[in-house]
Length: 387
Length: 120
Image 1 (cartoon, chains in turn orange, yellow):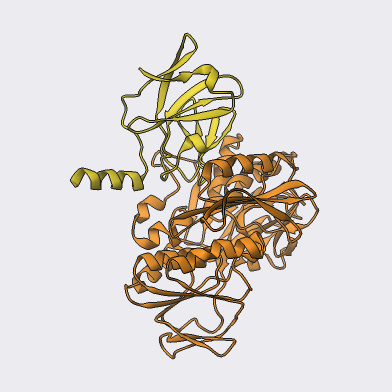
Image 2 (cartoon, chains in turn purple, orange):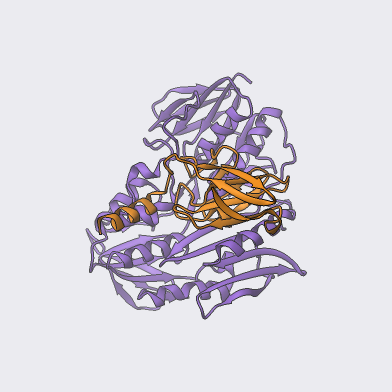
């Protein structure tokens, strides 16, 4: 393979480039990025960066002395993939051909429909999003966060710290019910109330009010919550539309085998845009930072060797910092898993919970239990990825 | 040299945080080697002694940066700067650490706290 193009220049794309060079690829390497910035770290955008505690330079992922011998094509997005000519069309009309491709186009924040021109309504995905939101987070303003997932909860936490009056609205009966289950989702959600954030669960949003600028949020039960600022944190959409009609199989993401291979030879996919097959044979789009950082090495080895080399894929791991608490979760609990509290207590606000299925630990949740959490994460990771 | 502990009290696969300024993490790998590095991750305030030791590498317990214990080099992001390594000496079954004289790469949150304390 003489030339490889990585489409996507965020964490997964950067890690793919590093893995290519680390695994001996010495050929031509092009990296295409839709954003004009070099790769940067997104997790702080809802936390330290949004709070103004760290600057943009702290977000960069590349050390000053790193040289991957790559051509960076930034500020350009891919618009089409032609499997026949093995080339990608870029947004400036140019064509980029290569022998092999790593698709790492990520995902974008799901907007609230019809609010594109309503000032004061934000999503959070990029540095520019964070800068725009930061400008609206003035002390005393009223913020409504739609969605009590991790981004929503972290923005709420940061905004409280900045002195805003914060309300979080969640359609599900408890926050984070998907990954954590109802009981522990509720346990983690108590940090909102403890820190003066109002939390409304089990109620959907009917719509946003305001003509030029948002004035509030109408809830499905008829209530109205006034707002000066609204943050929409309702998940992401994989950036895969550009691959439609290319012959690459798509579902909820680019469908990949257990080593990241797509349905077209010499094309692999990683990060938020990719749905890898898990041990159960199901495709699962894992949108966590650690997936974007760990899986590129596997995908690159698949690309360079022609097939999945059987490497172990670690179970998902993610963390969240809210109101000074460090929340960490690893594994896949699933709806039928039962949990026990191994350390601390839900009331104390610091605890470690282990989820088991058929007696086997499949997931672990820690709140301010860093050392113990790491031990359990390691134990869970030593087993095959849970089904 | 800083006396850490008897080698026998630090089993293979285990790590210990040593109070120094800045603190040190001492690791006993599964292969039986002993390494000492700065305990604080160069990315953000986290104790590497609480991290995941695998081979000659430790993964930060918070954000999964990886450091090579032999060289201190970053093996995985989000960290960009290496951690200092310190020379380990084992004499009569006791672990000692000869502290590095290089400047540490402390994370921005610690640096700003130290600056604030220095000004106070």
